[in-house]
Length: 147
Image: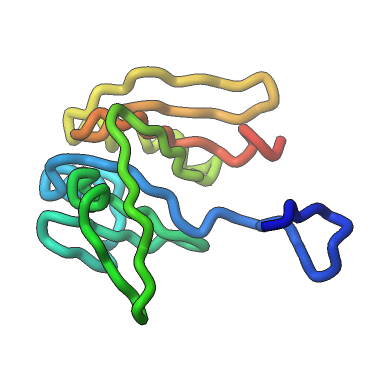
């Protein structure tokens, strides 16, 4: 396979991330966090394998790494490559500046420990906590990257 570069006709670099994946052993407990605490709506699930959430412009996929590292899943005769990881991951949710102030109150109401709050030099703001699987979850204003 050739390396694609900006000079090749027809190629455009990706404009966004379509899927973000986190792994957890207990999908029900993590599902409760993402549905009740974060407020996401479940789009699809398969017991013991995954829970999918649709966000504006992308998807959050929660997988049991044991399942995705070993399962052979075919779509139209083609195999989805196995994947999985161990250890904590990281995901940042984009929060509107006028809503960032309500995040600490919401987390505290569910007894979720806030690990850190950072006011970035460029005017962005981040609030960090952990999901039940130990993944680092950040709620951040877009100014963090797009100041």
